[in-house]
Image 1 (cartoon, rainbow, N blue to C red):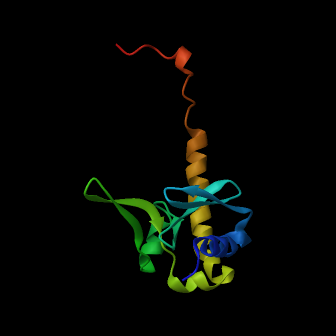
Image 2 (cartoon, rainbow, N blue to C red):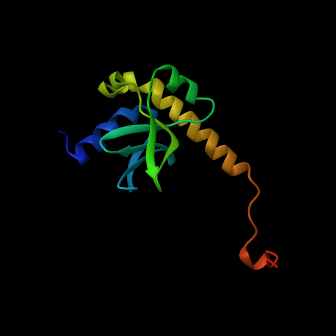
Image 3 (cartoon, helix red, strand yellow):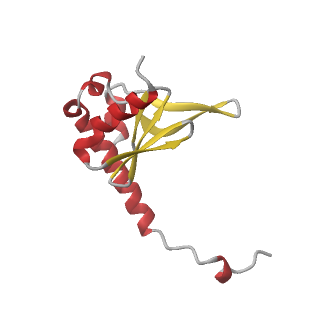
Length: 128
């Protein structure tokens, strides 16, 4: 079995062709960022790539399982999918899947930037 640090390093190497990759601890695992865009989760020694409505069909067509977890006795699903097993072997095989994830992260970031800014608390109307 590979140590968590070795697995994290391996996943960073797989995503490295896309840009500067950094890992950050979160949720008992790690979040992976490419050029400061959140693109993947590492949990339970698995890599989970970010998806959205445009990229999800590609992951599903390849039979990639979604990231699921139990919350209050119910199964919840996030927009992350495991890449095909063979993609874990090299950056070249991972690249098409990682690009889908990066594109989803870029679209999410774009949406976030286009939302109107919330006024500071001092400027908000009091709730009655």
